Length: 150
Image (cartoon, rainbow, N blue to C red; front, side, top):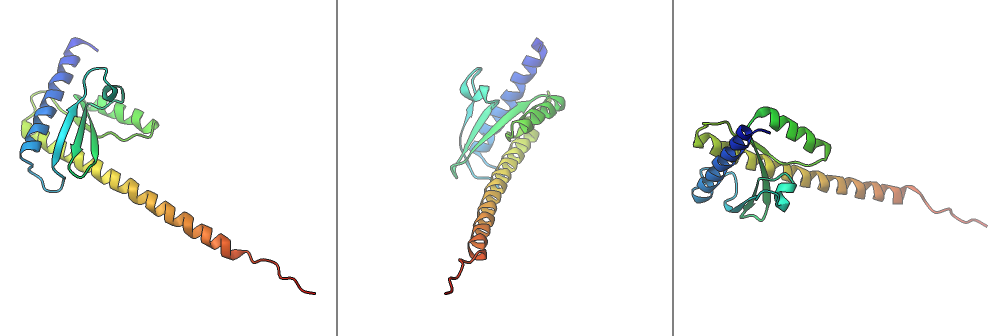
């Protein structure tokens, strides 16, 4: 990476931090829970090593990780690598000179995406558990004990 891309990354993260502050102070969308707080990962911190730039803590108790990229190519590469490791971290792509309102909309969209993904995973696990229980019940009743006759 050259200095220009590092500067782009720092500027992109600053835009997202500003957008998160705006959403935290005055939420413009009722479809997401209120942001209680957010953590900007320091360089080489535990969050940074997990490839998380921001950890958004919502009032409903969920924590939403966010990754900030400054190009679509880097976003695609990041998502491809995360798919291999079976992780899901929403990515926000911020272009240089992008309007703050656009970044706010992207932040809200990423939080919605993360909440929907969490909801889908939980529902899938509940469904799998029910299916397993039904299969167990069928197995128990399928086989009858042998009757003894004299």
